[in-house]
Image (cartoon, rainbow, N blue to C red; front, side, top):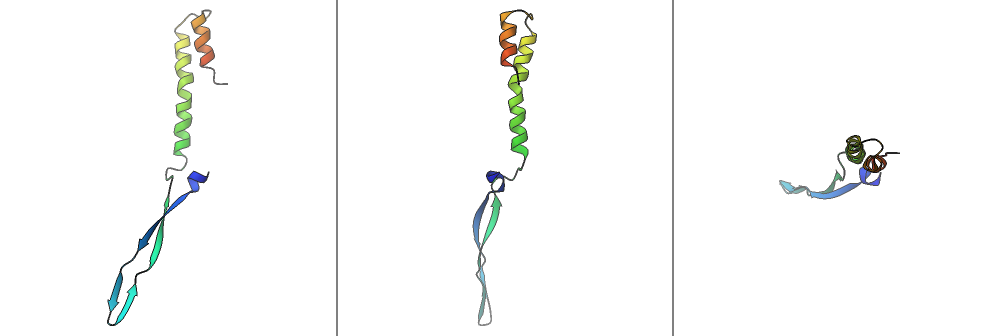
Length: 81
């Protein structure tokens, strides 16, 4: 939550200009730049990466006979609950 709402304040300075004998401008401000501009995308990407091991081990368990020790090992490793 803090990373999503976080900002980095980049200082900016505008140039001074002269009209006649008066000098205008030269103000200092900051540009609010968001740290994580993707929003929810990292969460969705991370959850999809966490699903891959379960799918991989489930597919490997399907390649062996259902009563064998390798089937039980891969089926246990691929459990998502």
